[in-house]
Length: 408
Image 1: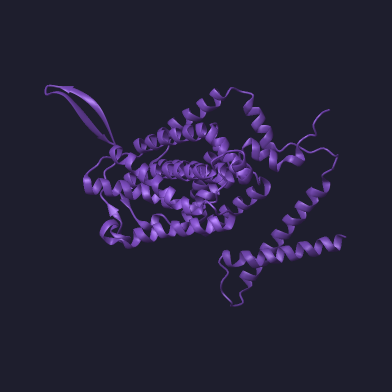
Image 2 (image 1 turned 90 degrees about the horizontal axis):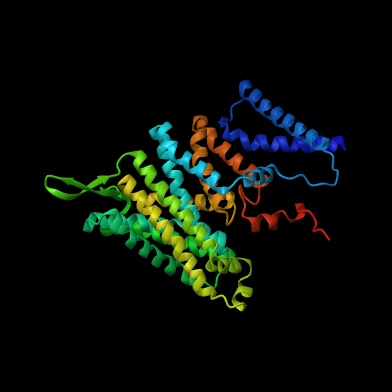
C-alpha cells in the first residue's frame, strides 16, 4: 500500500514538474548543472508537499459527523448582528478608501466597481434566469460607444446620453436574445459568443462611424451641476469629475444603485419567475409563466446595467476602442458570477474585487503572477464549488449531503 502511494506521488510530482518547468523560464535544451539542480529542487518540493498532505489526511479521524465549513461559521457569526451594522461598516470603509489610498489604488478600485456592475448585470441572465451568455461584453461596448458618439457628434452631456444608451443597450439585448429563446446549454453559449464577436467586429470595421481600430477620443467627463448666486443673479455651475476620487465616488454610487436594483428584482415576482425558468423551464411554462417575455426581459435588463457601466467607462477614459471589448472580458465577468456564487449578490461583489485586484497584488511576481492567480482560482473552485458567498438555494443544493437529517 505504501509503495503504491509513493508511486502515485512520484508520478504526480514528475507531471507537475513537466508542466511548471516551461512556466518558470527553463526553455533551453542545453545541459546545465544549475538548471538540473533547480528542476530537482522543484520536484523534491512538490514531492514533500504531497507527502505532507497525505499525512495530514491520514491523521484525520472520521467520527461520522460532518464538520461545518469555516465559511459557514463566519456567515453565522456575521448574521448574529443586524445587517444595518454590517452594511454601515462596509459603506463607511468604501467611502473612506480614497482618503488613505494613492491614485493607483483608487484607479484599481474604480475598475473593480465597474466589474461589480457588470457582474450584477450578468447575474440576472446567468444566475437568476439560467441563460449562459458568453457575449455579454457586447452590451458594455454598446453603452460606451453610444455615449461617445452622442457626446462627440451632438454634444450631449453624460446625463442626457445615459438614458439613450440604456434604451439602446436593452434593444440590442432583445435583438440578441430573441433568436436564442429556444436554445439551451452549449448551443446558447455558442450563439451568444457569436453575437458578441459580431458587435466587436462591426465596431472595428465601421470606420465612418466608430473610427475603426483607432477608436473615439475626446469625450467629456461626467459633470455635476449646482446653483450659484452672485452679482449676475442665479446661475448653474458645471463641475466636471476629473479627479480619480470624484470618479470613484461616482461609480460607487452607480454600484450601490445597481445592487439595490438587482436585489429588488431578485425578491420580486419577476425574480421568482426567472428562478423558476432556471430550475425547470417546461414546468415554469406549464405553471403559467410567460417564458418568452420573461427571458427577453432578463436579456434587456442585464444589457441595461452593462450599458451604464460602459458609458461611465468611456467617460472616465475619454477614449474607447474595440480592443477593450474582447471575448476574454466576457469570460472574466462570467468568472466573477461563478466564483462569487451563482445568484448571490454579496458573492459577486466580493468576487469582482478578488478577480480584478488579485492580479495587481501579484504584479511584483512578474511572470509568475498569473500562475499564482490561476492556482488560487483553481483552489477556490475545488474547495468552494458553490462560490465564495453562495445564495441560500444554491448552498442547499450543493451541500445537501452535509445538512443534518430532519428531526421527527
